[in-house]
Amino acid sequence: MEKDTALAAFAALGQETRLDVFRLLVKAGQEGMAAGAISDALDVRANTLSTHLSVLSRSGLVHARRDGRSIVYHADMAAIQSLVTYLLNDCCGGKPELCAPLFSMLQGGSGSSCCD
Amino acid sequence: MEKDTALAAFAALGQETRLDVFRLLVKAGQEGMAAGAISDALDVRANTLSTHLSVLSRSGLVHARRDGRSIVYHADMAAIQSLVTYLLNDCCGGKPELCAPLFSMLQGGSGSSCCD
DNA sequence: TCCATATTTCGAGTATTCTCGAATTATGGA
DNA sequence: TCCATAATTCGAGAATACTCGAAATATGGA
Image 1 (cartoon, chains in turn green, orange, yellow, red):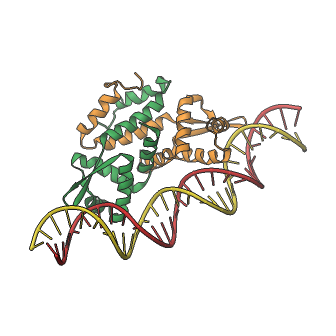
Image 2 (image 1 turned 90 degrees about the vertical axis):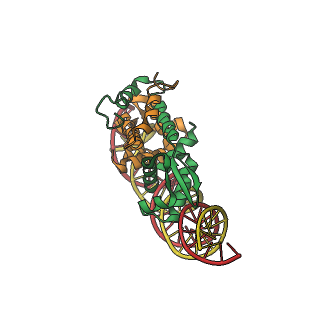
Image 3 (image 1 turned 30 degrees about the horizontal axis):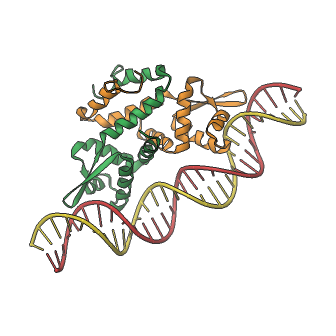
């Protein structure tokens, strides 16, 4: 992942409404959610949401497809993967020992609440 | 990790100079770097850097300690860890199968360039 | 105490971001 | 074709963020 991509992704997630949208889309999974449904769920005006969705799209964190009159957005899991990898690569660049605790946690070593 | 904390961390990393600072500090490891050294390394004015460092500090991604006349900053690895966990918890909330590919990658399954 | 160094704080100017109402584009159905 | 729905684009106003020079604070040494 290039620096600009990571930068765009971090900036996209560093805004409350967009973080909410992204988390909602992650929960929605592969089928995604239409812009209108997101707007209803989060109580954000359609046009405001639209600009946030375009920021998320440009960052690569979400993608859109048209379905009839609706435009359905879904989170790009590969993009999250890349972003995490980018952070971790940073974290252990040249100093693997710094990274070890992270990995033991991610692998469920300490009662992780994720994917066990 | 609470939402506000994650938000602050993402926002902090979504700015080029701050991302540069953070990566530099991660590379520097536990001994950290003085503000002046960071300023020199990245060619950023001292006062501008100072405001960026305060944003990073408030986000919890870095911490400061005084050493004589210098103030030495270092990255908080536990904060990265929390941020990654936050993203991953999102990613597999209720849908573990979405998270599986991430873990196989993180565990070095596909030629990862990190910590092998 | 006095001075130099290291860093932060202050204040202002510019740029960017966020939000909104109104207008526009695209689609599907009568 | 005409209308209703779904979403985006446009333009403007308010709020934030970024950067800088100048001034202030804190430390160590002569």
